[in-house]
Length: 264
Image 1 (cartoon, rainbow, N blue to C red):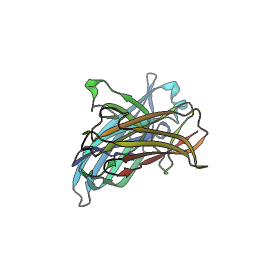
Image 2: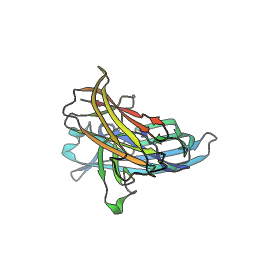
Image 3: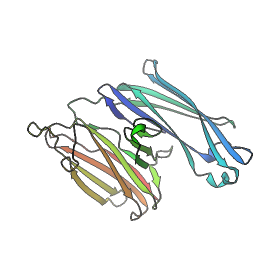
Image 4: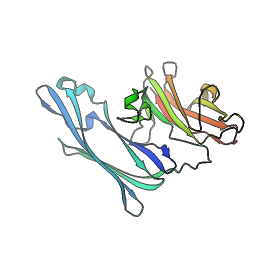
């Protein structure tokens, strides 16, 4: 399970909820050469006083050719639901039921939806994704894993807290929005420097260091979307951390969100 936070307005935050279920943990029923697993996913968001803020319930089907069921055991199905919420503290309960079997998984967590104050430099969640691509104009803001004009499919960590895992022949993608950049009074544009650092957590060695400025990024307002993609072939197996440092030259504020990922 993973929850992320993306600002929509000053008092509304989009909270994408991503649920991952391994194929080996669900029951496939084969009919006419097709094996199908059916999940029922139910979620509820409540305030601390018990008031229901959001609920969702959807069936999810996984279809595979019957001969591929055994070999897909380590593959996963992803479910994604984006919930608009006001800033505050909530409890999120998710129940996943294997319709063809007798198994059920539950997940309960407190989530703090951040308030994005107008004069405070801030960011969305730094999302580590295995897919990141622009969507057609008529699909902007709609569809699974779509945030704004980009499809961002998170690669999420394991239930025991380990970071997302990538293979060396894959690319890791990084998506983040920056909010409340201050406009320079003369140019009427923001002035900020963005630094990308990727560090090998085993030996603390810096693998990637890259810097860019809002001037290089062109037509930027007080909000900025950062999208970077990294081929992993040159990285040794191990655990890494990406940090994106944003330094607002006008307001002198700085943020440095980070996220971990593993390369195998």
